[in-house]
Amino acid sequence: MHILAVISGEYGARHVDNIRQYAPSSWQIETWNAPQTFPLVIDYPEDFLPSELPKADLILSFAEHKGVAELLPDIARMTGAQAVIAAVDNEAWLPRGLARQLREWLEKMGVVCVTPKPLCSLTEHDYGVTRRERTSYDHPLIAEFAGFFGQPDLKITVDDKTRTISAVYVKRDAVCGCARYAAQRLVGTPVGEAEEKAGLLHHHYPCLASMGIDSDFGDTLMHVSGNVLKDNVREQVKPYLQDQYITPGERGE
Image (tube, rainbow, N blue to C red; front, side):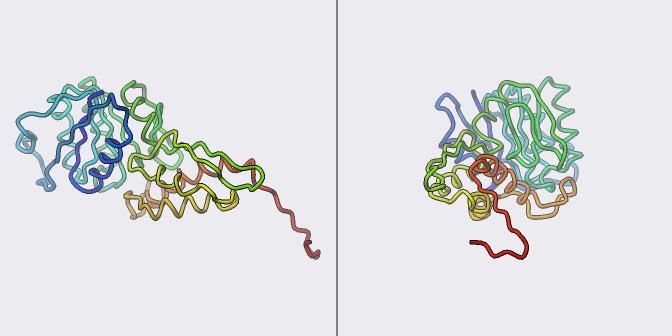
């Protein structure tokens, strides 16, 4: 698979570094650094594009300016891309209205576009949009990417005797690498502390999603992203947690 990642700063560069390090060897990844400033209205997108771009099957948009979204249809046309993943880790970088327009523009071109919010909500078949809404899609290239990068999915092994995590295998990393970072540091953690520690590790990485309150979630996208990782950890250690019962008026042993 030929991938073109569109970046404009540290956020995207960090994603690309992680993808390159852990992607299948069959993937070929190129980057294009988009402009960092745009006028309020882009009359001529070609003024902000290079004369040529490498051929690509899939475009990853990690840009930090909403103006880049208006260039993506032309980028898809120039590269011959069949699909686009446009991350929404900050509403200012890709507002919901523009994200909807982008999907419509690309659909008319026969190009499938997904706009996961946050980016680490992407799976092989759907992605997050709001707190209670997920949108499904059907495209093999996006699904192939999401098999390796997207919504964190860890396989946790617990030592029954010590009730601590003995191993963690990363089935799917977050695009930024946060899940792999957390996985390496969860080994040795008591199961009762695993969920909380996963949240702290997510914070320490740190997550690059927005710290502003997002109206679609009533929360920060950074917090939403952290909960995605914590939920994955909690579901796996739940069978090993012991229920404790307290009887009012009685002193425990």
